[in-house]
Length: 286
Image 1: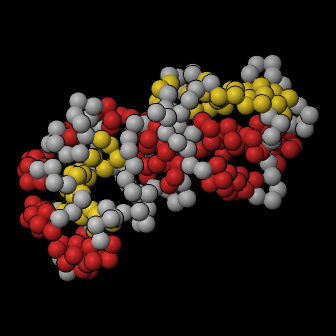
Image 2: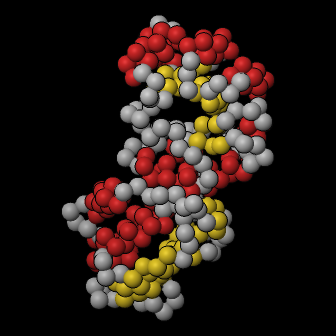
Image 3: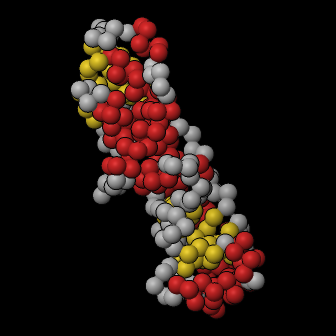
C-alpha cells in the first residue's frame, strides 16, 4: 500500500515558502539575464546514486507552481528503488521556468529520498525479526509531515506526529512530576484510558514501576541488548516495547533480536544524507 501524502494545501504552502526564500522580490536574476523568455527545453531529473525515492510528486508540484504550462511526467513512484541514471521526472516547456524551479525541486526530492533511503537500510537490517523502524519528533521545522511521509516510503512507521496526539512521558517530565509513578498517575487523571500513554525508562527498576502503574507503551532508552532482552521478558506483551538510542544499520539487527516491537531512530529525519539527484537538459533541447 502506497504511503499517503500530506494534504495538498500543506504541501503547496511548504513549496511556496521555499520558492519565496529562493526568489525573494528580484526573482532568478541569472536566468533572466541569460535565457530568452521564449526558449523551450526538455530536461530530466535522475538519480545519481542508488536509493529509495520519496518526494517525486512534491518536486513535480514545484514546477507546476512555477509555471502551470510546463509538461512534467513522473517516471518513478515514491517508494521505488532506483539505480544511478534512473529517470524519475521528465520536463518540457519554458527553459526559464525549469531553471527557476530546479533547486527547490531537487532540495525537496534529495532530502526526502535521503530519509527514505536511510529508513530502508534500517528496515532491511531488522527484516529477519518482527520489529519495525519508527521515526521521532526530531524533524526539520516546518517539514515534519513530509519527512514522516518519507519514512513510510522507506518502509518505516510513524511515531506520534506531535505533542497533541499521544502522551509520552520522558525523563524531564518524570523529574518535574516527582517520579515515574507520580507522572503516570497525573497523566491518567487528566486523559483517562482513551489516550495512548507511553513512558520512557532508563533502568529496569523504572520499568517495574511503570508496569505496576499500567502503560500502553514503554520507551527503553539507551539500554544494552542484554537489558533489552530482560526488559522484554518483564513486559511479557503487557505493553508495546520501543528501543531507542544510537541505533544504526550496524546495530539495529541485534537490537531487534532482543524482541522489542519498535526501534525509534531520530537521525533518519534530522541527519539522513540527501540522496544525490540532478536535473539535466537533454542534448539539443535549447
